[in-house]
Structure formats: C-alpha cells, structure tokens
Image 1: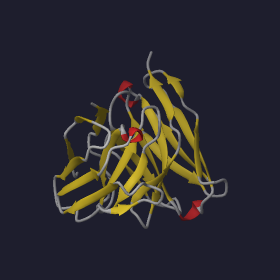
Image 2: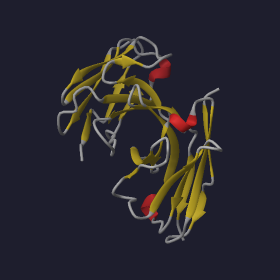
Image 3: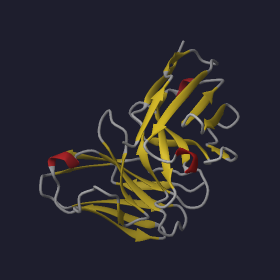
Image 4: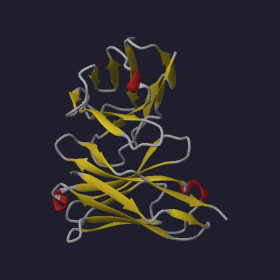
Length: 119
Length: 108
C-alpha cells in the first residue's frame, strides 16, 4: 500500500526548533520528488518545500527560506523538515506529499502533523 | 510568483446540482493546473491534474477544463460525499507551486 506517515509534531516555543519526519512505503522513494505542504488553522494550503529524488536540489517558500531545511534518507525511505527559529505564524498542520512527475501534482499525502508555536 | 485566485470562496448547492468552480492564474500557466478536494480533518486528495486529466479512482462526475489563465472544475451531479473544500494549484515551471485560497462547497 502506498503510504506516507508523518511524525514529530507538537508544541514549541517561539524561536525554538522542531524536526518533522515522514516515512514512505509502497513506491520507489528514491525516484520521487518529496514535499512539505502546510495549512494554518482555518486557512488554505501553502507549499513549503520540495526536494529532488537524489536530495541534491531543494526549493523553499520565501516564508521559510533560511529557517527550514528539507532533507531525505533514501536508504530509510524518509524525508525530513528541520524547522528552526519558529514563529507563531508557522503554526499549522504539516503534510508530507509525493510529487508525481508524470502528472505534475501531489498524488500521495500523509495524514498531517500539527505544529503549534506558542509560549 | 504566480498567484492563483478561486471563485467563489464559498457556495451552497443541492444534491444533484451541477456546480462549477473557477480558478484564475496571474500569468499563462498553459495546462499546468491541478484540483484537490479536502474534507475536514483530512489530507487533500488529487482529483484532476494538468487541467483536465482525471486521477485514477476519481468519479467521472468530476471534470476539469481550461488553459492559459482560466480554469474550471465541474461536478456534474452533486453527491453527498462531494461537500468539501476544493483547491486549485499551479505546477508551471519550478516551485513555488501556489494554491488558490479554496472554495468551500456546502449543502443548501
């Protein structure tokens, strides 16, 4: 079964750090572009970051550039999002998503992990 | 960055109605436009990719059209399970892959 499973969410103080993990199964992970998409409470979807299959190319939204780092471990079929200098406006559900190269869309999504940045 | 604008932001409709949701891009994105459905507390689900291609397993009452800057998602006959929020998203060129603000479809 094709599946993405996030872990690592929770409550963190402003200025703090947190790392999200996403475990993939059921598809050829090392060939797949992986991404993080977030959704603030009651708001719409916002693309956050993407990483190429080999891990050599990464893209970031301006809102997180310089603070978040995406990485992957193809030997473990996992992708990560290291979040530093967290702000209240980073509070959101974070989804791990697979980018389908044929359809140029996010075809597989994880269940999402809530990150709350608050003192 | 390319901006995506959906209309309306919300709409009410009845079972069996035909519904259309519009999405406009701030520049020409050819056919690089996707549609997603999201139900409360759930992850988004891909419905339509590259403007008009139906994702595997999605009912045929969903269809997409358009190219360039103007796109439409149509549900031909609303079913109870279709009440949700719908998002368009552009996939033209490199990231950022921006989303529209969403259209909430509610029961009349």
